[in-house]
Image: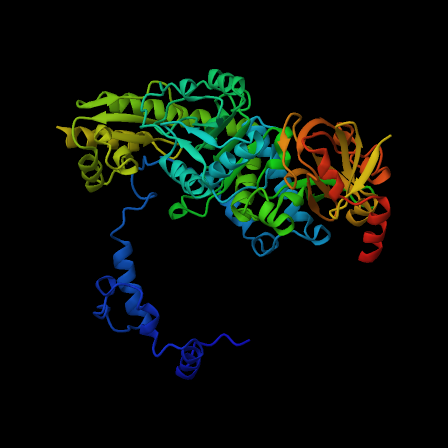
Length: 448
Length: 125
């Protein structure tokens, strides 16, 4: 087969076969008013040097994360990724390897997947983890579907402080599968009453910790209440570094834990690719989505690794598979595993402490600015502030002063007027004292 | 005296009074190969004829087992949880899947007896 563009003859032959006179005929179902008949005004072709100059000029208009004091989080976090990580993941054995269907030639890939699963299970306090999903939000939606299978119920209760992107992915899958969702207005201070919303039809309760606004929550009472009604507790973790300090979801009674693994080993990447974490209690393993790697012995009794429990998956189980996701974020989860291995348990805990300490320092500095109120009382590396002006204008004015000051809550909850003055602010190990001083000074000027 | 009946989906049903014991036939286990897991329904569940009642998973494939008759699941074979290979060793005995209380025992009349099933299987090869 040749990969050449269509010729006019090819095009005519195809049109003749389906009985259309022209390509325009194919669009006749689109109302006239919705069609753009004017030609699109694009510049003529240019030489390579000229294109490079124009694009560099456009790129220079961006204020990039690494170039200014940066405090943006809300589900994606800027951490330092050691150069070793990038060096190792670019080895061709890792970078170009395909799905490890043949264990006899894929032991390296299978071993790192197994180690990744082990790390995720240990961090989340669960018994079994899969080889990763696309990202935190798809993992969250898959967890809801899994809970429906386990409980044979159809209704999910979602926290009002679950990341709106996660909520939307759950909603997309639920709407088209006829599942019920119990949604809530945003709750900014971590005090929502989820227990009152759990009933005999509830399959699962989905809570984020720390939640979208940064609140660190004790989930034990919610876990008990869910279990008493035969429902499962799903905990979503968007900042995996937090588990270096906080009680794991497993310790607090979670049945399924999902998360975003980007914080370890992966740069912001313009929003993706990321790596979804998915872990659960052992008794639910057969209802888990995604790929699972297991440890075994070969014919000579030597330790080895294979994909296992594949009968859950689409290539064998077809439409009855536990998930349509039959793949994983291989390279991103490798980066996660290498970074976490480099840190070790001690380094990971220390990283978490530095994050928290930096966020506390920043919160104190910002709270001292006239016109700022700290909304979050218990947080890890992210918190919410209320400002005395419209948050959109404040963020823009800060950017003009070369400070990327966070995410306004109204951006993720459009139409919720009560959130108009809220900014979600993150501070990781990359922020220096100078960064924090610059933020406080800029904010003070903007709000004066 | 129990009656044994068979379905075209390779299930056997042994009836005593209004309680039917259901499993997969020896022919079915041979086709499946080594059974590694059996997912059984919860006790108390009402199933209609043709509903998915169990899933049997072998090293080759996973297959649904459909309820051959309507009724209520009154007991499941917990032995299969720890020893799924029992299905291979004794498919038509110790490897049974579920016991059901039949809602309409007359449905049995539509199923094959042993002789009919044997000739049905012979026709498949």
